Each structure stands twice: as structure tokens, then as C-alpha cells.
Image: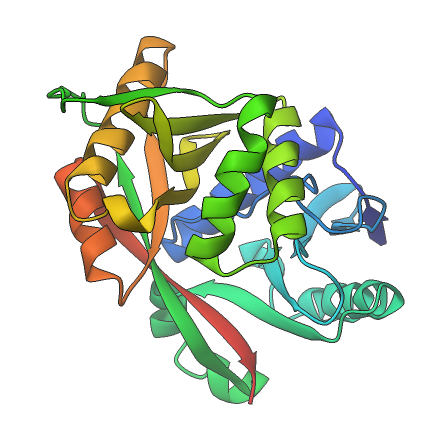
Length: 284
């Protein structure tokens, strides 16, 4: 049975995490799909396709569509290891495509991991998929000691900061200002997340969001262009980790483009280690 959902209930989230854990243990993978529709462009678009067998969750597809129609949507698909190669993934995918078409999306990529592709060497050929982009998934649980940098402070973001942050965010990630404004507001309203800003001499020069899930996942981190290369990013992420550790957090994760050696160096300086390589696949 296939079911589409806009959001997941607490019970469905629990079952989803159990399915993800079983799949990760079997495949030796590390990245979890984002189990929320908060950042999707259409709040009423079904973001999840669930597959059940004898009332047990055996398949999960997540549609991450945070930009307007015409942009590329990320599809994360998981099937219980014991029930693979039985058409469950195909059925979920076909259902997901119908949802995307209804909302004007025609481009999508599949999220996979290098270790899965290595264990299944015929997967790309059979599915006619090819790798278009790769990111490192990095994690740490290291206790953090932060050395102060003169003039730098970190605090939680407020609604009054949105306009100022959005301008720098748009420039850093080359995204429309309206999209960025919505993204930042949604982050502030997320009950399971936090938003931080970095200030230099009282002026906001950096931003980062944190999804407080199974581990605290950092996303959207940037430093304004004129302030890069001065150790600000390392201080920023260490300070956020120290704040979160005081609140009980222990595990932290982040993703970074494999070609971004500067950012990789920053995260390694903060104690992060590469645990997996995430690949994004599209039809040839």
C-alpha cells in the first residue's frame, strides 16, 4: 500500500527512523533524509511517499522541493533491505513523479552514497543514472574549547535580523532575495531548529541554521565575502557547538561540497571528520 503525506505524525516519524537505522546498518551509510516539509516551496504539497506491507513501513521517499517550479527536486528513497528488488522503489518513485508533475516540477535528482554504489556496482547502469555532484557528510562528537577572537560574538537570530542576513545570504548562495527571506523566516519558525548569527564589532557577518534531530545538523552556513579567510568560520561553528553542548547536544553533522577544500579545512579544524560521500544522481 502506498500513502502520500504532507507531514509525518510522531508515530510515522518513529517508524521512519527505525527504517532508516535498519537501512544504514545494512548499507553502512550515514546520511539521514530530512524528515520535514518546512522548507518546501509549496506547504501543502505531499513531501512523503510511504510504502506499507502488512501495516509495517517498508519504504520511504522524501521530496525536498525548496525552490519554485522549474528547479530540481531532491528525492531520498529508502526500502527495507529484506524487501528490495520487489518493485517497491519503482512504485514509490512513480507516485512521487505524479506529485511533482502536479506542482510543476519536472527535474529531480536522487540522493545516494558512495558506499552504497560501491556495494551495488551495477546500480547506475541498471537505473540509467549518473553522478552529477558529490558532497562529504561530516560528523563529530568532540568536546569543544573555543578561543576568543577579538570583536566576534555569536547569538541566536531574531526576526529583526532577517532583512540584513537575507542580503548577504542571497549574495553568498546566488539565490533570489524573496526565496532567501522565506527560507530564513521558516527557519526561525521551526520548533525543532535554531538559527545563529555571527557578529563582528556589532555587525552581522555570518549565519547558520541548525536542525536539532538525531544529531544537530548545521546548514546554510556562510561568512560575508569581505570577512572570509580570517578564521571567522572556524570560530563561528565552534562557538555554536559549545552553546549547543551546554544545552545537552553531543553529536553534530554537516555537509560540504567535495571540491570546497577551504570549507572542508574549516570543519576539520572544528573537529569534524568525513564519514561518508553523498552522491546526487540524475537520469543520463
